[in-house]
Amino acid sequence: MPASEKLDTHRKALTLNLDASIFGSFAEIGAGQEVARWFLLVGAASGSVAKAISAYDKAVSDDLYGAGSRYVSRERLVAMLSREWAQLLEQLDNTRGSQTRFFCFVDTVSARNYAGTNEAHGWIGLRFQQEPRGEPNDVLLHVNLQDPTNLLQQQAIGILGVNLIYAAFHQSQTKEYFLESVADDVTGRIEIDYVDLRGSAFQPWDQRTLLAHLVCTGLARGVCFPAAGSPTPPTEVLHRRALVLAPGYFAHADPAHAEIHTQMIASGIQQLQEELGESKVPPRGFFCLTLAPLRTNDRVPEIADVLHRIEALGARGGDVLLVRERELYTLTELVNRYTKEPVRFVVGLSLLIRMLHDRYNKLDDSLLKALSHLFAQNVRIYAYPMKTADLQESIQGIDALDWEWSETNGWVSARQLHPAPPLGYLYSYLLASNFLVPIEGD
Image (cartoon, rainbow, N blue to C red; front, top):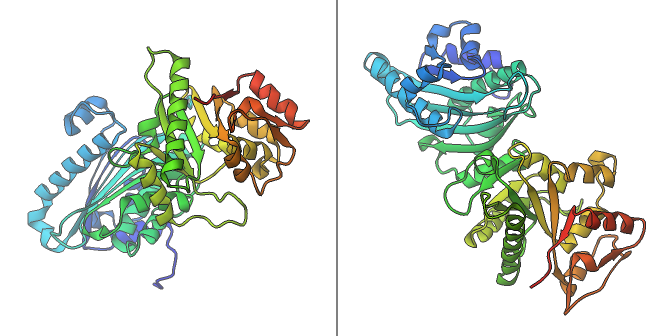
């Protein structure tokens, strides 16, 4: 067939079934057995399916893969992958290992429950050989399921699983091509917010570059780069936590700006801790670095530049969420997937002014609609003071001539900003209603 021909899920599964050199097993928990079903449905399944198993019962799952981990977690996925791979080789390597490229597909998924109250997400894993008796390569993915019904989510997992197996054997020429092939026909239905690729098939691909690429291409709304340790899916660090989010571009990596960024997020965390009381779990802070350009005509930053900014923030102990969109209300929507605890944005005054002057094209240019989305679910904004000179420089290029302010020792606080009416009335309301909380300078 022509190299450019696009295969649907049926043709991909059938192509794998008809390849006598590819043989493997399936272990799926949650969301049905939709991946194995494709291979059984299209015909010639005996050509590629050694086994299909689904350990839905918790006691059965614990007996197979060990107790002590959450059922939808990386730990459970890795345990499934290790056991199924070991069993596959033990049973089949002697008889057909010399001519077979083995694979093992596993997933553990929490699809939408009947009431729609759970987090619909899952872990997907694949171990495979590029040549008979070759060293194994691993693909680990974390996904969020976006479809509105359980049935549609199951179907999407089935397509993604077939895509992943097919891409591993046929579409791993470049990291961009591989990731886009995995998401074929499920873009917008499944979000991939974590990827870990291991083995010679993926050398010399860099995980941090892969994660940034997920956001650049729209496969993920956000990915997480902790300052300490390896990257992790957002759900692992945001789940049921009170949060302080510091959005921005962080293009200035010099010590002076770095110190301001560090002080700003530390002040926000301290302010929220005082609100919560010392008995509560301490809030966690994140710098939210956006890929969206500040102005319409600006270019999207290169991934190398983005990673440099993340490394600069991480060097000072800053955890980073890399996000695709720049509007603050989109961050509210993102983190509210994972937590109902208090969320606070901490922003400089220049970003606050830009927020109130932005054009919200996705919301019919409605500032009030944007604010209603932003301040949902116990969200507030902490406004951090700025030096007068920095404030003047930062708002150049936007139509903010109707803003006046006073200053104290060269600094301006949120209470010293005075926008002209009618925006001034809205600004006063946000202050009086405690949606906007000034942080006073030291």
